[in-house]
Amino acid sequence: MNETKRHSGFFLFESEKGVLLFHRPAASDSPRLLISSSHDGAKFTQKNLSGDFSSIGKKGKPFGNASSFRAAQLDGKIFLSFFDHDADSLEILSSDTGTEWESVIKKRNFGHPTVLVETASDKRHAIAAFSASGRKFITLSLTDKKFKAWNLRGVVLEARPKFFDVSGLSPLSVSRTKHGIVLVYTAINREGSMTIGAALFDAKQPEVLLWRSASPIWTAPEKWLGTKMSILGGANVGKYYYAYFQSATGEIETFPMSRLWETYLIPSLLKPLKISKVLGSLKKKKGEPEVLPEHQKITISVSHRLSRHAKNPILEPRQEQSWEAFSAFNAAALMIDDKIHLLYRAQGHDGISVLGHAVTEDGMRISKRSSDPVFVPSNPFDVRKLESPYVSFPYVSGGGWGGCEDPRITRIGSRIYMTYVAFNGSCPPGVALTSIRTRDFGKNWEWSIPRLISRPNQTQKNWVIFPEKINGKYALLHNISPTIRIAYLDSLDDPDLVIDSTPPRPKDEDGERWDNIVRGVGAPPIRTEHGWIVLYHAMDRRDPNRYKVGAMLLDLEHPETVLARSSDPILEPEADYENHGHKQGVVYVCGAVIKDGTLFVYYGASDRSLAVATANLDRFVTALRKAKPPKLTTISLS
Image: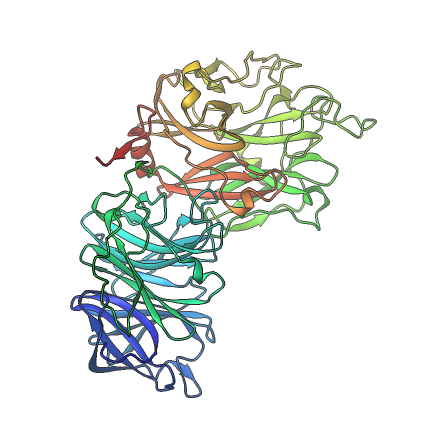
């Protein structure tokens, strides 16, 4: 731009004719904004145009109480999204030239900032909207080109405590490339500095994450610490990506970054090429070298990871109910009449585990929850001896001192069978079995007399029943490591049923895998056309005391055969609620169902609350099948 005085910028975006910056002199209160353009991303020239935004604002104050401006060019038109704090809604405007604007839609209770991009999907899902949700998540919504039919797809990115993006996730810009949809986002690292990362999504199915940078592509200079900087936007210019920021004094700065993350799908840890004053002198110093990306080897993330629900946890303890005042977590799940029923483990401050009941119709929002327990300990193997206030056997799970723990439920014909961990406080925990008629489930709660089916005085957990007979027999999966062990039974109602099992242990050659300590099965197996999905819990000796979830695919007719096994966790404790409950670093699955083509996985978070994560079933199975052999894929640059 020819003038050097300070300006007040509002937003900037990449257009077909270069980079467009909407701004006004800092001292001006006019609702009309000036428009400047740049072809190189650094030198801006003011155009003889100005945009009329007089419709935004209250009582003559331009832009009112609005923030989070993001703009993009879609199908030849300019679309601007911003958040109106007075109306508590996200608003989207459109314009052909940037001079005259009209309102497209206002949406309440919608995340911000929001960036828009065209997808390669059908007309109903032609536009993808990536939005910040709190400080930990970025969510995805899809809509048609008229912004009428909206479809929330859920969380697509979340903060990562062990990486550069520990909090403050916010979309900066998004664009379509030959590789897919590239989302550039800002985040805050452990030191409190702003960083920039990038993620690649499938163009036709933008909820599918293909790759995410393991290192920041830019980190704010130290002088910014403690300084408020506004984000104006970002743009691709040639082989560089430019991010634009404005300080409280009105100076606008841009940082060019290499776009190697698009070219090679790898993260690049770069220093800024230089700091440029957009509205001042922008000439590059002579002899100033460009900083090249460092050579590194990286892993490619896979798309069979689960996506957390943005409003997790979905169940938490209720202080007004003494039986679940301490925790409400690890839940079995079952679909009945298109509703998902959850039997969850609950504890009061007495440390006794009982089971509660909840219903969700969409898989995420609880529509019904029992006021009393629906299953309580009533047998010598699960009732704690009252004369002993403390556990005499050295086993404590989820802070409990006894009772019915970690249920799994399976429907076969007219009955629903439940296995659970039975613990009386003085003997090793074992596995018990009970059942109920399907017509009584959720109503009368008339359970059959529970029986301990594991060998007495042996520690056993995590036994599940297949949802259908295999070769004419009931199948009970009781061990998955070092081999799959299944008991085939003529009846599940035999009063003398006792199954011998050994604790899971890893194979000797598994020492380098993420799951070199296998704990056991999570939810009962789920049938697909390609095999049985089995979710399981495991740990890594190199990352001790953190429960993670993996997935296996077993052969349909011979489920002892493992067809595929996830090469990395599909879920691991990263969110706050998974690390700040009663036990840090625990995600524990007891139930999973398929509803409308989506896999819903219900898991206990840090032994306190219940959460849910989802995945598209077809894509999940496809990615899992490609995960064999169980080795990480690497790419290196020579």
